[in-house]
Length: 211
Image (cartoon, rainbow, N blue to C red; front, side, top):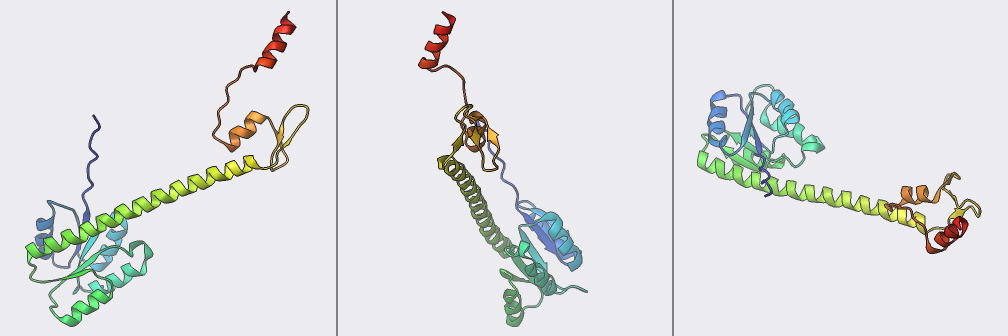
């Protein structure tokens, strides 16, 4: 019986300068997701590189480095271009929401947070991220398979070309002008495996010598 492969919990990074706000969101989400937290923008960027979260819940109004600045810095790095960012903020204005979405956020949640609505929005974005991960893994697999096929075709093409072979000892001249035994050359340029025996003609000659 084949054991089921455990599904990895998706990871969420919650960033807010208020520990109470972090606690509320963390308690609501910890059952379904792995949670990591940061109290400021600088720690958020450090944790982002360390933990590689699947989604970022980001407060906008923070001292020193606010959420909008954090978002700009994250989007400036290609490695996190597809990281979903949801702004969580007390700034309930159309202008603020537009600004956040223009920076690359995927959603906008206002405080006080409606936990039921927040959980649904998080779930939707996590599921989209999961699907993107599957597509990315499939593309990577296809790329590896293509590279392996191209390497195999390259070996076959080398074998299809004109080969120089010694009339006496039957060694083959390589592309580097080295001389290799036939078995060695074919073994290096293909997946063939040799076994040794005698053909009927050679067997007959051997028997005659023994006689």
